[in-house]
Image 1: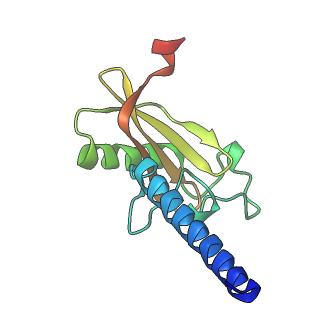
Image 2: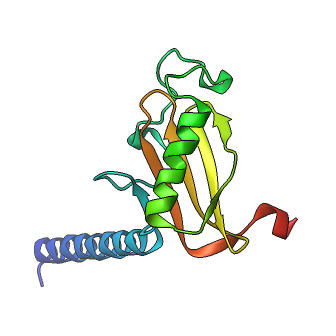
Length: 139
């Protein structure tokens, strides 16, 4: 085999290895993140800027002065639970820089975290395929 051909074969094999590796990583990502959803038509991984919950804007969200109040956000969280996890309990919520976060529990297990943007009222949810122990049960 000529040295030119050998170089092409090596490059082709390397490209194939990269392609197969990328496909394996993508499949692994889908399997591990299949419980992460946003109310609506997008999927996200946790609560990042892709969900519209970034640290942009001039509102000091940590003081709770957004357009959506804690009570309104809790109502939205309870609406999500009523539709998607009947019988689960929503906690009082925590004010965060990007809005409010509510922990949803059922049978002393965390089954979801509901995030409500305090500017838009948009609801994002992170669910668990296998429930997580509640912080009080582990501590």
